[in-house]
Length: 115
Length: 111
Image (tube, rainbow over the protein chains, first blue to last red):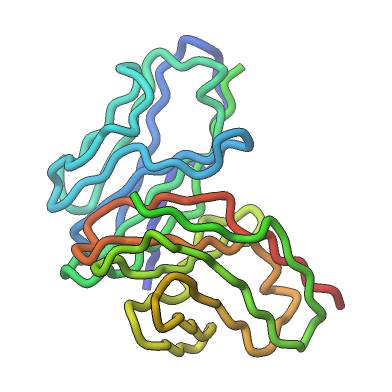
């Protein structure tokens, strides 16, 4: 079975440019999560969706960050304009929430470098 | 949110059992105890979770104290591929929440 698929795997771009990260969750999963990992702050939850609806975006650092989930099989995380401090590994995860704490399945991440 | 406390690092030998402790003294009655691990250069991976009773799966066992204020992840026979950062996380019973990762325990396996 295909797991969570993220693209691109690596992204290097200059400060000020728009960056779009993509995620395809596991088929049948109804929750999707975006996380960011840095050496300084570890793994942080940015935003999550249930049934394509954003539930909690309190982890989104600034208005420069936005996330969408137009359908059950696709989500994007966009940074505009990007800054060097946005450099991190961004993970997408999905799960099927049935009220008993189902596990989250993570993608391999997108390593983002902003020059 | 209820917090967890784990040792920063632990070291073990290959093919020996490993016991990874986690303290969660402020756990609430509806909190599940989840364990994830992150291998180098990979995304986190679910290991196991439980509520009150001990749990076993193909990867590990989870022993939960009777008062639920602590738990132990048990790898019965560690291999070099088990070298990873292990995270103990509390998740409310609804489950439809993001995970709050602490610093975890960096497990080192010696050949």
